[in-house]
Length: 107
Image (cartoon, rainbow, N blue to C red):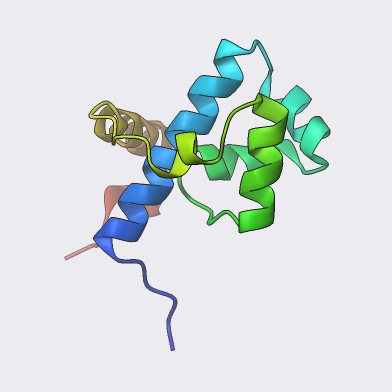
């Protein structure tokens, strides 16, 4: 059975990832620095910030500890309308790099 995401799941991951990035930047951490604090690769953290990777409860709690925020600030935060621009920017970057999957389904 394929692992499919609902629109709600995707929206939640995008919002949580966007918030992690915002809090990380507010605290002046680079992607590499924060990944080191979490004991993960910076690519993994980058995928979480882009909403490309699900985050376990354990990892969410660790991220909140590093950022010194309550987990509710990630889970129950209001969706940010700029997330759509964030996702669109990523698609444009992938297209510029020649990533055929960024263009969407081929007809």
